Image (cartoon, rainbow, N blue to C red; front, side, top):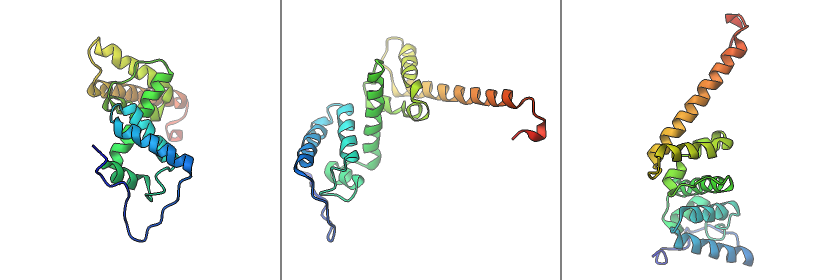
Length: 173
């Protein structure tokens, strides 16, 4: 389905780095995953992460974003959404927690993963518990994440107030 799309960004005057044979081989393997991929968001996201991290796009593209657009007709946002979803799902697997079934659900957990990764498993478990046997939806996870982030902010505010309660009003920040 993707094979008819252009595989190189052809911009006059641009030069690209040549990949080593092992890098070209790895890029071919990763691109097969992405092309097949769109079978599972985790595989696709992890493949894109490796392409970006190892800069395996550099023999044909000047940037990862150009690679996404030209090779996969994918926006920068979509590529990063897939990578973020894969990172969240992989972290949950490492913790032995049920993983989201879609990238959209996984992506809702990104704020917890970025703010406090140790709370990621608890956030997903809370969403699963709240779903009560029904599918865990992006809206449900978003609600859990908001509650957890707000309660953490409220707790931090309370701790700050308690820590500064002994100060005179003009000494408080």
